[in-house]
Image 1 (cartoon, one colour):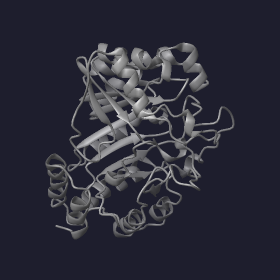
Image 2 (cartoon, rainbow, N blue to C red):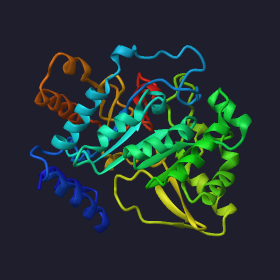
Image 3 (tube, one colour):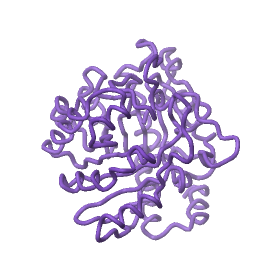
Length: 362
């Protein structure tokens, strides 16, 4: 076993279930001829967030400007063939085992089911999912499922039309709700609803959103509000924290029981609430950086080792200049090797990334 992995297990005093999960990851690596993607802190990277566009059909204040959003020129966006090449390399040579398609809004990318089918055909890939705002899901859900998409994460911050328009700065709640119901009918392996926890904005609807998810037998996850907005207006006191969420849940529901975390890299703490589960992702107050297993590739072909990274490794130019697979993997490994210990939001002098969320990939 790589000494960095051994040290990681000892340093973080992993529980039996967590050690078993890490052992399974290492075992799966033996199916590749190359070493896994490990940073200087011993973290093994098996999860890829793959953005296919920086464009979106709404303008949520926590992600994009209301007007004047700057997008990458279309000829700078990776083609499906270029995306597939990088994905295949990372799976076959780097040990990546799950891929999540992101954006922008990935469903605005033309012929996205074709890309899903291409990626689903990568033999060693174990999980393929997609994050969406749901507005185009009613018309795409069946084709995505048929193409091989296994799981969906759907953003749902509110059930109130006026609040939706305040957040998204566009109309669209009804289309999102229709998209959720259409996806449920398709029989995806998993559907999760994601809600940003923002004081005074999504805070009043916590119980209503949980009941909405419970009625549909899908999991709702609350995510602490992060500094990724283009307007740079984020303030720490806007975060509706995980502790505050728990207090609200305990007031509204008879039983809120914490569940074990099956994998150390899982971002959400899960709770049994009535007949379903609710997740809380404490990205600000209790970040999970120590167990992070994620890397990101932007729509224009740059690899990033963290959502809050201040640098990235451009791959598009290498690909289009005829770089070999070995050259690409070397650039990717170099980027991962430079990953910071943590995102540093709670540290003095923290600076958000130069790229806004929509340009990085959710």
